[in-house]
Length: 317
Ligand code: NAD
Image (tube, rainbow, N blue to C red; front, side, top):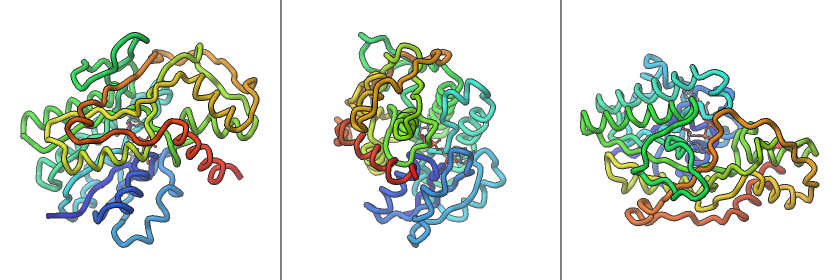
């Protein structure tokens, strides 16, 4: 059995943490393909080059010709992290999201179809389910897809393509839908890194709307462990929700970070709300817990301190 994995988008936040986890905890060899867009960070991956079980190929998954170079061997699985991932950018211009998130996923599915990989795990998001009210029950795998912005619409479209390839060709395809991740190596445009970096530099911290939007925070290491379990034991055709069990308002998250860094709350600056801003995401991860035995292990406080310390040591001169 092949011990090669093809990881896409491995220079980004979750992909680079996943490679770190797999090289450290398993015997898989990993090919990382990444287009190195603005979101890909060489610093996230350069230390992997010393590992003989790792190689990097600079490649755009939406370009089927360029993608061929990665398929010089047969993979046990493709883990598809590559995506345009920032909601605000998708509101400015949705085209790159359609290109990478939909066309890129289709190219990878076609590679599975012709036998270049034995299975594929599509890394999706809870945002495909849309938004919840404060009293609503968390999303389950049976919640309808109701994306509210171009980013989540492109991810939902990719999920439907994956589903259709499973139904049509009976390919071993699995979808995971996770809640908001946090941890080291995330791009500074994202919420928690931006708050940490601005606070460390005594700069204003923009807070959308009334600050009461709720996200369920998942520490990235917990997510990587879940994906590994799905890789080994997940059932083809299934969807697995992965959540952190830590619902917090955006205001609460900022306050925790400011208090830990001993900074004044006056740094918070309320700004006009994001267009189509989803009010609340919360995800029911009972299925992956019951069927694969996974549950999050990192408390929000521990994960946040780990993250803040990483940014202090790595991103602030
Ligand atoms: P990221 O933006 O940090 O990284 C994306 C990576 O993909 C970058 O390295 C980028 O260079 C690469 N990439 C972009 N377009 C590409 C293309 N056409 N070909 C090859 N590589 C390309 O994203 P992330 O936060 O690590 O998210 C990874 C996956 O997890 C995404 O699919 C995202 O939708 C999903 N997800 C993320 C979160 C989160 O909180 N970060 C939550 C739910 C789901």
